[in-house]
Each structure stands twice: as structure tokens, then as C-alpha cells.
Length: 376
Image (cartoon, rainbow, N blue to C red; front, side, top):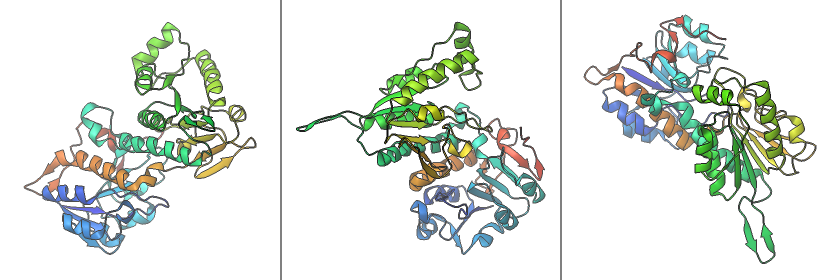
């Protein structure tokens, strides 16, 4: 069985779906691997390194994909790429199926499409979870981006000329990215506050040295939030109003704001209103990590930095992991390997998807030419 690793074609995508490390492990499973020339250069992986790991190097995408039984990608195939993929191949990528316009094209080619971002949140799937691995890196890099944009400093400094106050950072959304952002901002010396719909996140925030932005909850609301883990909880209008007041006060006084709240398959919730941004101090920085799904901040724009009338910079980078391509590719490719290797037959040199597996079944958006994913 042949695994094909093409070079990503989407503008700004610097990651690659397999590194020499994972290629070597795939080869040890009896699989053949072909990598498009230059596919890993932006991730610090040379053609020579891939060859040393056991891969063959193909001159272009057509030669990479023509005979590949399994295709590993970062971004879902475009229409041009679909035309090059072997009839009936299996493709693993981040498909963003809720907004992907090529599902019918994949089906017409008889493809089986595994959407890696749909891997369920179960314990044994954690090592294959691309959302968590990439969000972890993005949360770290987002704080560094903010530090670079900010004309001040993060830590408190005592000098002969006087004391520099520490920057105040607010993190909205305390998932994987938010927790990493809190930890990174604290390591840089900032005072950090954070908020999330999940009451259980309070302990996590405080364990990292952050201050929890508490929103009053009724006993009924607390029971609902704890019962669903927070992710599926629909807050009451009163809670939304109280949360807006708390967020407005914290953000208005912040120097740095990092927003991370995203809901798979839906538009990102607006957490920071324009009137709140208007109250912020000149020179304040907002990193909207949800800008690619609509944004958490009113006024943010995809892949642009917006400077407001009061001098606030709203940074909207849609693909932050691509800015740390070497490590992002290393983690992403290990996610792929961890997902596929339990289904490998070393003696036969093949991989057969276990379609009834609780970890595999939810990821199948197209199977043998049939579209399974239903858009909301």
C-alpha cells in the first residue's frame, strides 16, 4: 500500500502532514511512502531527510497522488487536487466539512474522506486529536504575537528611573489554546485574568496563576453547566448579560486580550463588542484566534490587523499554527500516525479502516463515494 504526501497548496499553509520521523515509522509498518519534492521545506524537513527515512521523492503533485492509496494532507483537497487523486483513495486531512464545498466532488471520485478534526473527545483518541495539538501551539504563539505587537512590556520591572507596571492580559475561552495562552502570558510576567462558560475551568485557571473572572450563576445554571461540561450548555439571557458586564470591565482595563472561543461547525461567538474595544487604552492589543470562523471580536478581519480610532490593534491571523510550522507539523504528523498505526497490518503492508471503531466512525464524512456528513 502506498501513502502519498503532497505539498500543501493553500496560500500561507506551511505545514506538512508527515515528517521524516513519521515516514520512518510508517515504513517500519511495511508501507510505501511517496513525498512530493519540497513538501516539507517550510517545516524544516528536506527531501534528503525523507529519503533517508524510507520515502521516495516525486517531482510534482500528480506523481505523488496518481498511485497513492492513502493521502495525508493538512488542508482538505481543492478541486485541482481532487482531479489528481487516485480513484477510490482514502484521504485524511482537516476538511472543515461544515463549510467544505467539495464534498460532492470527493464522492464523485469515489474517495473515502477522514476529517481529522471530528475525532471524538474520548481518552484513547487524545493522541490523534489534531485540534488539541494545534491549539496548544497556537495559544503559545498568540501570546508571542501580542508581545511583539505591544509597544510596552509584559513583566514588572524595577529600574533606577522608576517601576514599570506589568501588562494586564485577559484570556477569553479556557480550552487547550486558552490554557496555553494563560501559562505563556504568566511566564512572560503578565497579570492574567480569564473567563469561560465552564465553571470547572476556574480551578485550571487558578492553577496556572491566573485570576478567574467570576460570573454569578444560579444553582440551576451551575447544574446545567457542570452536567454538560460547559460545551453544550445554553446560558440564560441573565447569565449572558452578567457575563457581558464582567467581560466589558476586564477587557476595558486590559493591555492584551486573547480570544479563543470556537464551536465546531458553527460561527464563533462574539465575546467582545465594539463599544468595549472603544474603551480600551491606546496601544492595547487583541489577538482574535477565532477570526477564521467569524471572530470573537467585533471589527476583527481575517488575516488583517485592524487599528481602531482609539489606537487598539485587533490582530486576526487565521492560521497561527502555520507560523510555527516545524513543531506544528511534528505534532500533526504524529496525530496522523497514531490514528492509522493501530489499523496497520505489517505482514500485508496495508492499512484497513475499521469503520465501526468509535474513534474512526465519526470522522468519515465521505465513504466509498457516498457523502455521509450532513451540513446543519
